Length: 370
Image: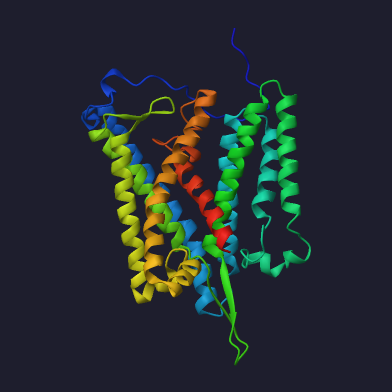
């Protein structure tokens, strides 16, 4: 007798992890397999679409900071577009994570997505939110810093209560869901702050207010480029040269050979990219992490270069760890993908796991230097 699906649950394909095909073993050149070739083509096409979407995200931030820096035109529409797109991405990621950890009913989804949106919108320090409606609404006048940890605490309590109340969700899954949600939210906060954040200076002679990008939208391009190159060349290197499994219990098809190839390509490309923006005069106002790095360069150019090199090495490693972390979450509930939203890649979280965790670390970094 067939069981009827709960009418209160959303639909999402959940595929149980299966053992790799015999002919798809680690140690063989898997590019020779028809299934591998077909999957590779699908991944390439999906990646092109994802890059187009990324361009839309980045362009809105680039338009906003460029118009505010070099013209007197109203740039708020570009800022609002960026924030709305980011909130939309947050809801997709939250939907997948909530569904994965058992929060499937529509009212769970709605409640937790509203909390996530409130935490995302709430400014931690107003110095970092010198853009968009944060300025126009003077939120610093009626929002206080102590309210943010209170909001997060309430969200944690609600998550645990739901875990206790619903027999299909245990407290462990509730806590995992909370932690992963905070990583997603803080990562997307870093995206908005880096893309839209401004520095305000006043000309003492004319009292004219001048704006410039604080961290530069190029920061997002830089990190995302390294993560994409790392993921892509880990896949290509593992398919072609992979022999030694990296983490067989979490991500069976990842290999040390593929990881080293991907990390090497990403780090090398990241260093070259940063140096171009550092030393090409027309691009210096858009260099990654503009304000803190230029401040560091004012003390020692050598130190600024060293920090860029270290960050270019570290961020791909952070991305790899993020990939394994999100894969570990899937293993806890025995699914292969977070959803089937993106052909060849799975869900949004399957494709953005590395970048979200990297942006989460970026948020910690920019919070410490703000």
